[in-house]
Image (cartoon, rainbow, N blue to C red; front, side, top):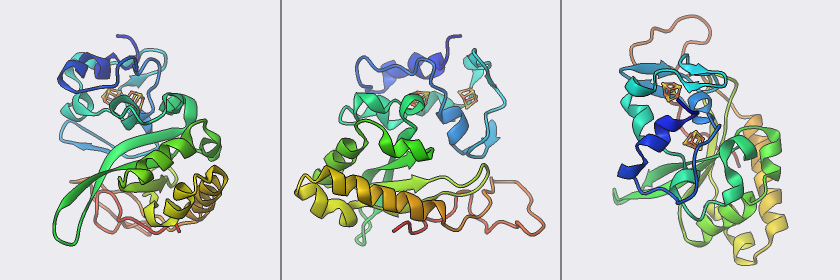
Length: 214
Ligand code: SF4
Ligand code: SF4
């Protein structure tokens, strides 16, 4: 199979941004925690089925989670073209929150996969577009492989700068959040059915709670 044809193959059932293909990107096969009955892996580790230069080696029988996942770059036109995850270090995913009245609101989480991601062309514009549209935006800074990410909602922090169209301030606040997120507390990710022991005994959740970044 060609790299990531797994995702492209099911695109007909999902509304995807025209002209964007996974190509050689395999970021989601490494960066995501997958807790599927057929496949379990934690963030930061390559999937055992991902073969260098070949993509997914079990393409015809890949798990349901893999068949149905698309990152925000594939799904959302307002995510800048320049933010293909493997080229930018920025992984946008659909996310959400529950309002106090119980209403679920769709949002996005933006994972900065490395320090350089902050300099990705189009990052500030993409974040600003979401905040201007009042879409909940969560910044996620991954921990070491196997550990939770530091996460925080950005909207209230960035709204004034976005309203002033102050790109430099948006980037300054993102940098500040990235620094704080890198120092954030982590806990080991535990998947369903995994035993835990020792000093890194996890705290129960498959994916840790949101932790404040700023
Ligand atoms: S991260 Fe996005 S672009 Fe990259 S392989 Fe996954 S779905 Fe495709
Ligand atoms: S099974 Fe295939 S598509 Fe799913 S994470 Fe592994 S390499 Fe990627």
